[in-house]
Image (cartoon, rainbow, N blue to C red; front, side):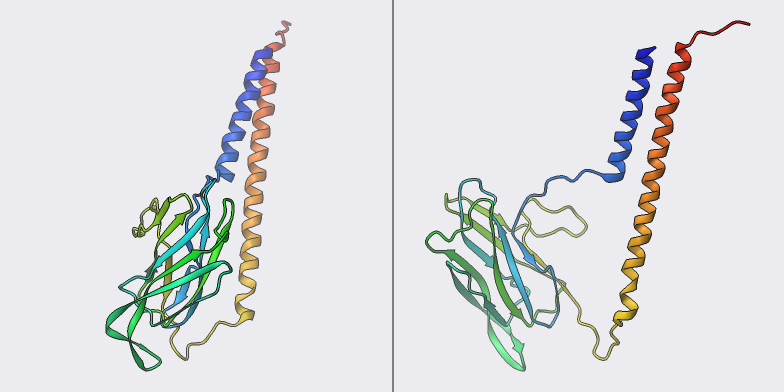
Length: 243
C-alpha cells in the first residue's frame, strides 16, 4: 500500500511540473549578434543609433567592425561618435539620382563604415562595445539592413549579413535592421499624457490579477489531486470490516 501512496504522490508531482512548465515556460539561450539600437526611427528624420557589438569568442578580441549601408536606401549625412582606442574610416559612393538634403542635391552617400581597434582597445571576451552613428534624412523605405563583418584577433570573421525573411524565423547570422516608420502628418493632434498614462497601469493590474487567479486555481487543483491520491491509497490499505 505504501507503493500506491508513492505512485499517487509521484503522479501529482509530475502533473504539477507539467502545469508549471505550461504557465511559466522555459527561456532558451539566445545567441548574441551585432544589433542596431534603437531598432526604430522615423522616415525623413535624423536618428542617433548605436551598433552594439558583443564578443562571442572565449579567447580572442574583436578588433574590427565593418558596417555596410544599404544601396537601396542612401543617406545624405552620416557622422560617427568617437570611440576611445578605435579609428573609423568612411567610404563613399556616387548616387544617381542625387539625394536632396535641406534643399541641396547631394551626389555622394556613405557606403561603408570601418572601425579598427588600436593597441589593446579591442572588445575582449565577455564584453561588448557600442559604436554611435548619427544619420539622416532617413529614406522613405520600411527598413534599412546593415550587413556587418566582425573580425577577431585570431583571424575569425563573423558575417552578420543574413536579411530577415518576412514572417519567417530569425536567420542564423542576422544583419542589424533599423525599422523606419512613416512620419506623423503635419498638424495631427498628439495624444495627451493624461489620456495615455492611466491605460498601461490598469491593463497591467488586470493581467496580474488574472495570472494570479489562474495560478491559484492551478495550485488548488493540484492540491486536491494529491489529497485524493493519498485518500485512495489509505482506503486500499484499510481492511474492510464485515457487520
